[in-house]
Image 1 (tube, rainbow, N blue to C red):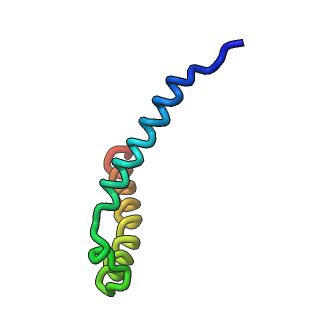
Image 2: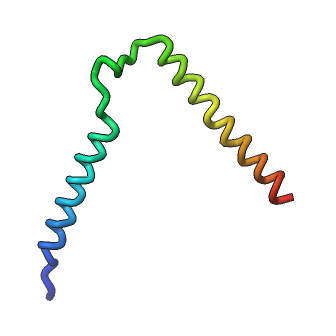
Length: 70
């Protein structure tokens, strides 16, 4: 019976750990002061974006369907 290649598994785990560290640097590099969740304008902006995003996506899908499929 073959034994799994542990060196490849260890290398894959190291690569995954490195990718996770780099992702944390990219996505969570804002200072704590800039990450204020109690800012009313930021809350309003998030609400608007959450409403407009899906509406624009559906509108784009309908437009592309009507333009290219009919």
